[in-house]
Image (cartoon, rainbow, N blue to C red; front, side):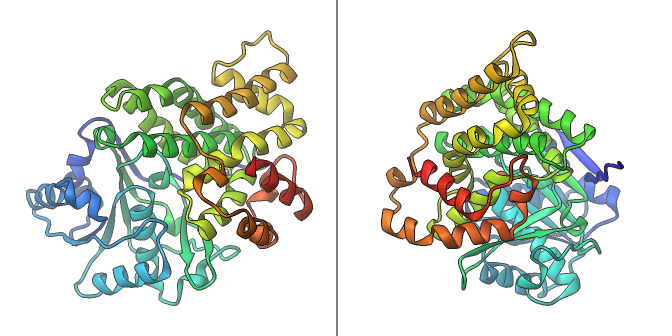
Length: 386
Ligand SMILES: [Fe+2]
């Protein structure tokens, strides 16, 4: 079998990488960027600093700072309108997963037109849009290295997964120094998101030797550093490892896939506005315990990569340690249950059938080593409820 791997053409990784944007654009022959970002990045002074860095390379950049968390069709349309006010030849996504996902969507609609809903899976958008340069400020989504974007259709409360090479950034500037001010809750949520990417890429039915290497490296880095980064935001070594792990996990799942946790997590985010990493965390222990019997050796490898078991320990016992650790990690990082987070039980129960339907439609559950039917998925939502 051939593994079809796709990566950004340029990766610049390390402290200060984000300051090299001008150089990277010149390398790529690009000169008229729109910076797509949010108010947090503007408030930090980073958007203006990027504009200044680009200016010293002779590049004039405009800024669109009105992206929203869990970007919506309306927020993408606003960004597109801004882009059309001037002649732009590329889009720089600067921020967490939402600004980068917004940049990707704007870049595709700018070149190909139509409505965002036209682009959701099973449609695959390989024909390129405008080139995207990604500068992540969270160690989490891995969006800087993936061929996906997720846009919420606010009319139907559906998180639309959009896939294809058009969404893969041509360059990613991966600079952990941008994460030093990230608050504990965000550090925990985005870190668990990365860990979920790595585990799901590794156990995915579409895993391959290339994605495996990236996934295992990411698990090693994240397992050893997530609690450290949460305990001490200024732990530079932990932040650096988490940032690299997040990008490697993004590369892993972009070239394999995510699976059941993400499939079930998106509807929780869409209906109840639970942050993405948090809804993954709510599901990860239960879904791992349910899925593991179908791929015991693979989950045992995850336990070993996370230093929870050594090579001598049998698979069954290693996997038990993995499931325990995922529950303990949630407890240590104060991950609430859906009820504790404030979700109304009646509304949750009423929406479970629709959430199961939307999860299945995304295609992600089919990549899981154990594929649930709707009734089994409803049971997993019940277990995640606690
Ligand atoms: Fe994710």
